[in-house]
Image 1: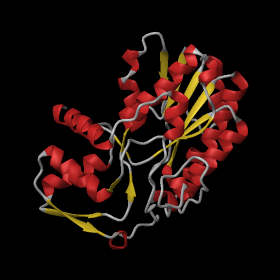
Image 2: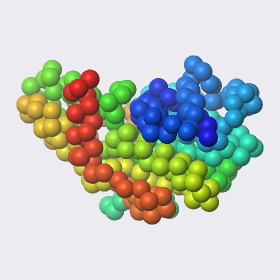
Image 3: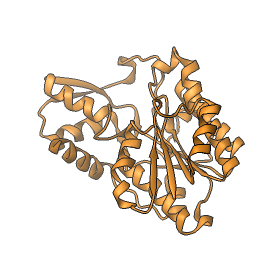
Image 4: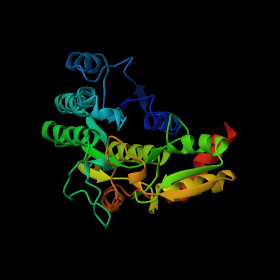
Length: 290
């Protein structure tokens, strides 16, 4: 079985690479913008013609949330048009598509975890383009799996955990927002879940159940809670002050509540999801050894 992973340089793509040795019978095709332009119909068609592709895992995304407001054309191209092109090609060739989306498709004003059927209402260009991508994927290829995730971090790439570790060594105190609540998600856990879905498909094709799914680690935290845990587990002594989002104005309004209900993905694919603090400890241990 041959699996095409787009966005291979990103956090999720890098974590999938780490798991390749667990699947010796599979051939992974890792691409990024330098080797496959997924915004080009011709490039995608040529790639599929030259390579047998059984499954596509689309990790590619325009994730600069604030920059997306001033660069909406590029964000739309990467987050909406590219998934549409991949979805169409997968349908035409019979390949399965797993596309990764975001909690930013929601307004963030709920008080109970969002389920897959809850009303979407993105508040910024990033969320709108990602929602457009979801809709395009399902319109072109109803047999696709879409996984919304939140607050992704990893030992690879740039992310909140690495930023806090750097600031923790540079500053004596920090202000971190406490009125935005969600769940930190270790990209390695999401990578493992995605490959578990692929494995189930390989064993029994009918076990690939299309639709929208939610995946984050278990539990709930604010960015303030997340920061305290990072410093506690890393042994960094620093004063962290809880502040309101209004004290940190940004071009994009962040969701105040983006906890995701993961019942569907757990039930349909028998996936066990680790608690966010346990996964954070694993990631920090890996970073300390690096």
